[in-house]
Image 1 (cartoon, rainbow over the protein chains, first blue to last red):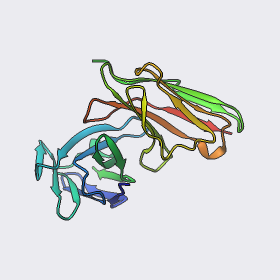
Image 2 (image 1 turned 90 degrees about the vertical axis):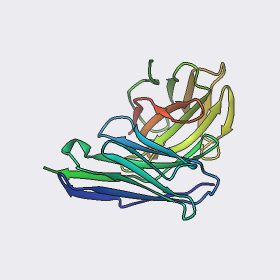
Image 3 (image 1 turned 180 degrees about the vertical axis):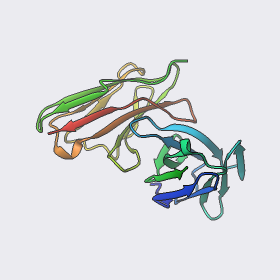
Image 4 (image 1 turned 60 degrees about the vertical axis):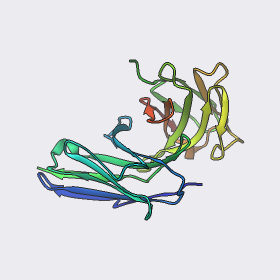
Length: 110
Length: 111
């Protein structure tokens, strides 16, 4: 089955800096790659997603890139703010079967 | 549009007791998922339903966990008997062929 690896497990940046989180997946048939943000004690919330026919997608300060050949995808957050502090999960999905990475705890220091 | 509903939000039981969780997905969503999220880890899929049929239950500990979605809408997840290591947040999610939307989860503590 699908295996998703996520790095780093923790990331601390200064407010205004950029943050990058990387994930790799094993199943070349995976075709949908969402990113979720989970604040303490709350449910995971979708922040951005990308499908396998697209290499990059951007939404304001958040962007995701996908390299299907290498089977990796990344989340980029620019101009980070303290409210970006949370745990971020990547996931890879095929036919609605989704597997999650272990998560990255992002801390943005004011 | 109403989101995914779950109840109860919190549950504390002793080991060897039984517990049941309920989930009501977003209206019209054919696919429903139950995940277990242990503190500090990502959600782990327990079972996936497509309407009222099971698509994937390969990671469900079937000796103690069971789930059903009899009418293809609401779903219940049961643990019987519970063990200490079952302490986690149980998340329900639904989708209609793409994005999964999560419920608020049920935080289970097994003492």
